[in-house]
Amino acid sequence: EARKLQLNKLDEWRNHAYENARTYKEKTKAWYDSRIAGKEFKEGDKVLLFNSRLMLFPGKLKTRWSGPFEVAKVFLYGAIELHNDDGSTFKVNGHQLKHYIEGEQPIHHGFVLSLKPP
Image (tube, rainbow, N blue to C red):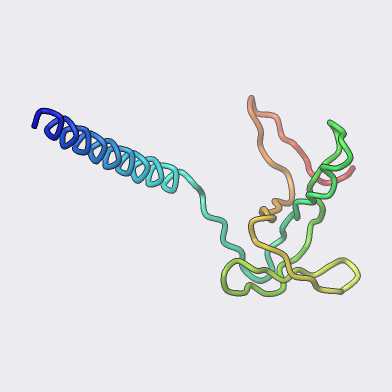
């Protein structure tokens, strides 16, 4: 009987540990999801495209972002159609994009960073 009680107690501890792990994961996911800034793209927005193929050729100063491209159409589930410079269009996953900000941008200590060539 003592052994049966020990096995029951062990099952209770195991269930309690599973429940604690599940609640921890739920809270961590909720915190993480609350900190993510959603990216919403509209037609006409300027965006940069992440080029993952450049990771094959290492280089500290090589940029992995190409563009800017113009958003032609936004599809369901994150697919986005982009206009290329030559007028052609292609579809990409929205996770590979980030907004392109044109013009001068203020930076720390009152300096201004110009993104346009002189």
